[in-house]
Image (cartoon, rainbow, N blue to C red):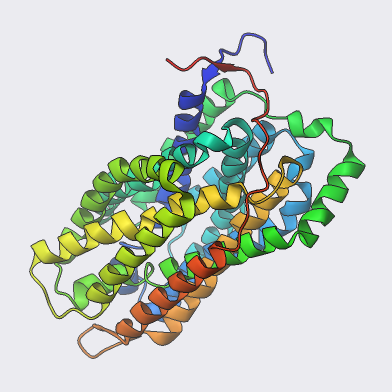
Length: 412
């Protein structure tokens, strides 16, 4: 690293990493509200559209699995710059795609690089933020989801409806390029884990595979993602065709939900640090279950009621992942952290892929375009989330060490 690179505070570092996550999540999320338009313009059904979503997540999961043994062998800064560049190129390919097959192939590239980038971000946060503030730090990173929903998705929808469905991907490329430059300039090396010999790092990875606590943590995350992602891919078509939301109003679903969670995600993180991560997770799961069952069994509703329910879904369903990420990040010792975060990201992506594929298999299109059997999705979502909580109670904290030393400035 150049000695002239300015130091960065912990808070500023988290915001920078959240910006990287913003580009990654916006790329993933913008596909969901584009569902009605893509299904119409590319002449595909819910199963094929769910397959596009699953292609991204399966690629992310597979590459994450292959990368896991090597995650702790590189400076996290250099690896993140490389993977984020690959993600930007994959998103550019999405914008240049004009057929369902080409778009699916481009989504695979995005998933391959984006999944590893997400794992690296979580590993860096776990490296530099002490356990006592870990959930709050994860809350800031999770705010990227909220910002992507509140700012990125409505903008993407507007551009897609005003111009073409490819336009949002070009916007994400522009955001990604600017963010990559900021990342290159400000992100300090994160390489204290390299002080461990290669042999010991290899032993740490095999120890991770034998770590029963890590296994429970990975299964916990898999089930939680299943309970969330089984609803997400076809939620927008369901709101439009079943509940009666005008397609041009879809952007308000993400705008309202995103704005709400920008404020609630950090609050949930602070609450989890104060009251207990598993306790707050349980509360979020219970409330989210009530919201999910209401949405998936509702008749046609006024726009205000749909926006209210979707806002509650954003707050509580998405909020589950703030304490969950903190629980997972503390499940292994630092020597296994990078590989674990890669496996954790892999498991999340595979869970999302399985959930999206399952949703596409269960839900069919009715004569007037409505999503048939979507209520079954709600029951499965609630069941998977409840099971994730039971598994999460078995995860124990193994990371009790202070954060590694990186050149951070003092927080203002």
